[in-house]
Length: 317
Image (tube, rainbow, N blue to C red; front, top):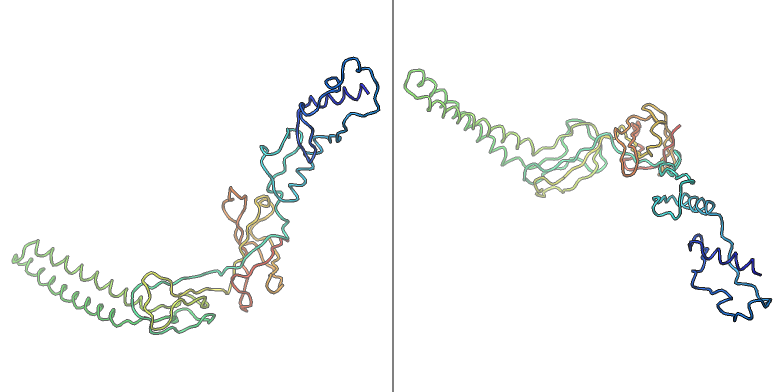
C-alpha cells in the first residue's frame, strides 16, 4: 500500500501534459490520505486502492505516431507546433510527401495562341470563320469597315505630295539665295510631318483587316457582324494546335531524375488515350514557396484529335 502511494506521488510531481488522449490530473486535484485521515488512524489498513490511472506511453513512440498520422494526411507542420523535443526523431522533408510520378497531372496548351484586339473603331462588316474552323496563313479572318480610314489615307498622301513640292521649291530658292535657312528648315519639317501622317493613316487602314499570322483554328469570337468594337478589346482568339504542349508541375525532388529528352507516358483523362512523348523544356527556376518545377512536353497533333485544355496523368518512364 505504501509503495503504491509513493509511486503515485512521484508521478504527480512530474510535468503535467496531454498527449494522444492521455490526461494526468494536476497536483492540486487529489489530496494524500494523510490530509484526510487523523494521525491516530495512519497505520490502519484498508481494503480501498488508491485512484487508478492510465499507463503513460513512451514519448518517442507518441511522437513517431503523430508524425505518421501527419504524413498520411499530407500535412507537415513546423517543429514549433509539435510538443516535446524532436532531437531524436527525424523530421520528414515536405517534398517527400508529393505523389509518385504516376500521379503527376498535366494540361494541354497550344504551341501558339494569339488574341486580336480592335486597333481602330469601325463596324465589323464580315467574319469569315466560325469557332473551330481551320485557316491558313494570310487568310482574312475579320474585316472592319475601311471607308473612313481609306479617306484619311488618301488625304495624308495628298498633303505629303504638297509638302514635297513646297520643299523642292524652297531648296531652289535657298540655292539662289532667295530663301533663308529658316524657310528651308520649315519646309523640311512640314514634309516630314506629312510623311508621318501617311504612315499612321496607312497603319490604321491595314488594322481594319485581320489576317491569319499562321495556320491554325479559331478558338473564340467575341463580337458579331455589324457591331462596333471597343478599341483595345479582344475580339478574336486563334490557336495553332498541330503541336500541343503538355505542361506539368513536378516536385523539385525529381530534378535529378529528369532531363531534356527523357521519355514520358501521358494518359488523357477525357478519352483514356495513352501518348508517348519526350521532355522538351525544363523550367529554369524552382518556385521557393511550393518547391515545384515547370516541365513541358511537345505532342504531335496532326490528326486534331487532341484538344487544348485536355488534362491527364503524367508518368516518367
